[in-house]
Image 1 (cartoon, protein in one colour):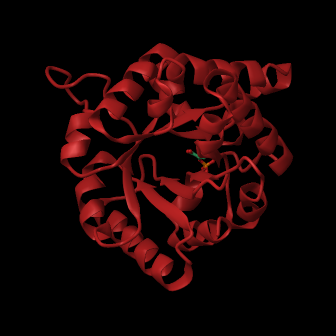
Image 2 (cartoon, protein in one colour; image 1 turned 180 degrees about the vertical axis):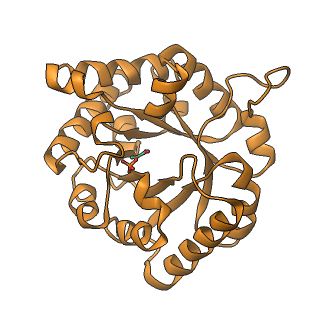
Length: 254
Ligand code: PEP
């Protein structure tokens, strides 16, 4: 089965409003001029820039996403943003469970299951992140941990709902470190995740789900990573902050 290729940028907590506007404009212009439109591009930008980025990308093929949202619907949760708010602002995608959310904000499997439910119930597409820290990789228990992460937050879903999820495998030791998983390591883990999904939901469902790789994806390694059978594109942090690099990475998915 041919799955769509997706290249999503995770800007994290970077850029001012003006810089965000310029970066978005550059991504739109370069993608129009240089890409064939075979890969879906998504910009996951900080909350304050969502509306301006959406307005800028209207009428282009570039999608917009948030980097997190609340597990609650509304109410006295100062500082939080709900899936309903994102929906009403016209934002179709949201990253959930990024390793920085797990590490610095205590997000865990059961909490993320609630967030996934809210996002799906609202009609948005979650980009659900999983991946092992260095010590787990060194112990050799990475497959078990990643399967557990997927199971804890996604395996309560119906097959129809699971099919709406984008998964991102992001080994924590490769995020922002310049250390990329080899294409063989990435392929191995993507196959493990897909097989795990097939075990519960069947092969057709597992084959339909995009699994992105994240962790120091750069223009010079993107093509090889994205060529792997079970790697359906990338979630890109640092390199998504430069339009030139982001577009060159996207070329690797075409
Ligand atoms: C990320 O933050 O999702 C990420 C993969 O970061 P980087 O590309 O900088 O490693």
